[in-house]
Image (cartoon, rainbow, N blue to C red; front, top):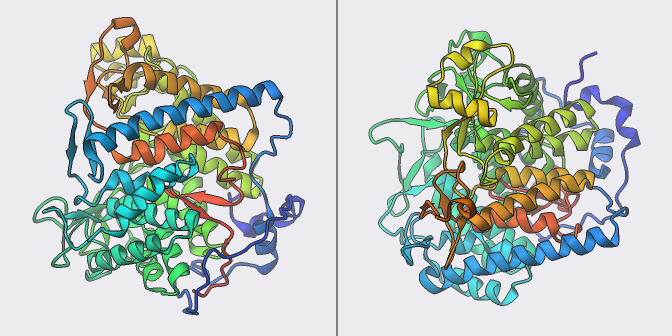
Length: 557
């Protein structure tokens, strides 16, 4: 019998051996609403979550106990945590000096930048990092800034709905759950209510862009009605939790309707030429028809967080949202069969799938997959898929470890084992890179992205294997050598050059809010006390905002 990952129908008695956690399941906020969750509770066969399996899944633990950590290992770990906190403060103080309250800082230019409507994206995105690093003075100062925010003043920019949700709404919700300061919940609700007009479309699919003051939505491409899979499907976690905290099911229903429409309008049985492999959803989407507009499926940029939110929202929902489980199960099986390949150097990478044709191209966004897949696999005890996560992580790490800078390129191309045409199609300089590094650099810059660090954090927390934490430390040292400047950190233009060897830094003056929210969060958590944001008690959004798993859910809000 073929194992269907995370499909509780096929797990049977294997779950009985789950470990049990004695942690109380106490809601973080008392709500009075009892609105039913109408969407997502049933799979496509009309099945709801089985009560017995729910009990077992809810008690299964995924995090390593770390009882075997030696005093020497602990000392090294805490020294590294302190060093990373010091690095964060270096970046935060530069932001505070030149751009406090602004969306971003141009570190080299020593000036602020408005990129996310002027609501302080870096500050809001970093709230939970400040809290976790015990920078409470900075946290409460930031809270006072948040309290005065007026989201109706849009900074003269259209709001990118997806980014506003993951950076602002997610950041505010996490800050609320960590501090229990109601200001953050009030602001999260206020902003989400302003975003809801983006869903006022024929099928309830959200526009990419929104004029906050008028409520008029649009595509990022003027005059078009196009969007992508990630921007459609990355509302589920934040909107589900907001429904729980407010008792208002509207948010959850809006996010879940996206899945309903996608399934109804793109049934492979109906002969849709653009959807040919069930579970591998094409990236490009037309909002007005509800249909995929080409066959290109990819778990990297444009698709990544859609798949991430299928399984993480299932976990956040107390394992109640059966449709999320079913779609993840189908997708991860298709991913394993069609969307990964070994390089001629033995590394396992994911790739781009157009119809049934595989392209050996991968970007750094795909490095989120090992961590999310390992989390899912641990929950159900699937050794097969956990091994897949480990192999993908090892492959992803080679793209950093084989570079002189110890940092990975934004995107690479690789040559599949026993597919010589992959090599023959490369440019001459790319062929030389394949010989030297094992892959070719498609986009050779590094912009402080977190995904590989994130997955190493997950594997370290789940296994206790210091190989993973040592790798994170090596990446951090690469960041220190190649990205640290006088008032913060910036991108580096070419990962094949190490600044300590060349004597010069070829910098890109870019420091997005995710560096404070995600990169520093996962760097620090790898070395902080292991019960800090224990994976059995918290689940992270795509922007690394922790949301509690201790809130019960019975199908009503």
